[in-house]
Length: 139
Image (tube, rainbow, N blue to C red; front, side):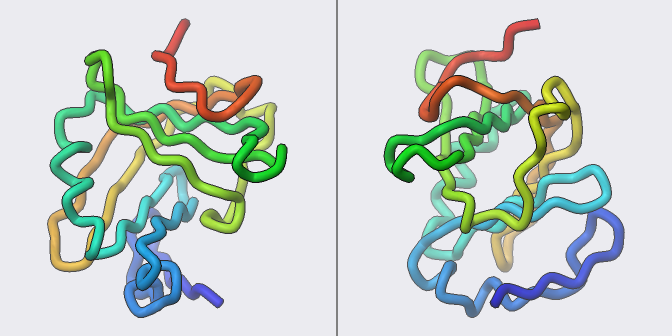
């Protein structure tokens, strides 16, 4: 079981870094105090370079065929290119799924990888018809 000790948006301690998730190269998304904290395993550290040029992160939730139609989570690191970096997570890779009523909500996205400086992005949430969605934000 994953344990996370919070101080507002900050994570004071977690066992994620030594968890099965991290060992298997799986990211984990934790929500607290108006922030989505993306924990990235050390073996996927190269993702950080892909994320750095993003202007924002669009978090989309919708049915995902890879999860047999259960909701999946897409994190699109919007850099206004033709191929922005994106991650797809199952419900087991998050401690909370935002309800549809949160569509359009904004928050902070904090990307953490053990031993690296955190990355901070503005985040936006939307419900979508299916994952992968991979489309820019439309007002």
